[in-house]
Length: 105
Image (cartoon, rainbow, N blue to C red; front, top):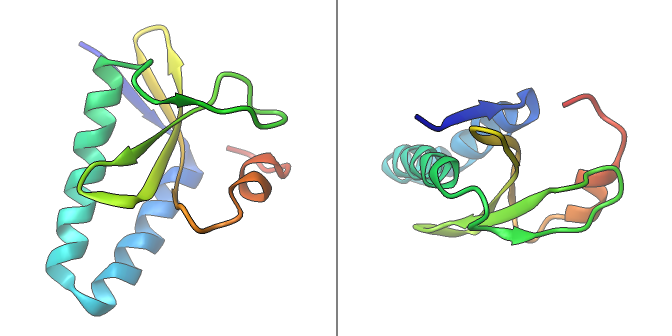
């Protein structure tokens, strides 16, 4: 069975994004969280599915849009038996800045 490891920043991202979406539409927030989980499971089974990204200090990082919420991107790294989820971000954010600054994940 493939596994999904979630870095603390990715968990914080989901809380923030879920709360933000819920301010306008609580049902959409629930669908977003479920879609994120389904995306994680898809990626765990097919770790090379996403696009390879090239950010300093993040070798091997890949990205994949959440299918039902295309504005949101999962950033992850394939591991031996699944994936490690680093961040979940809205596509209009400054991705390079958010993914290359020094921070414990």
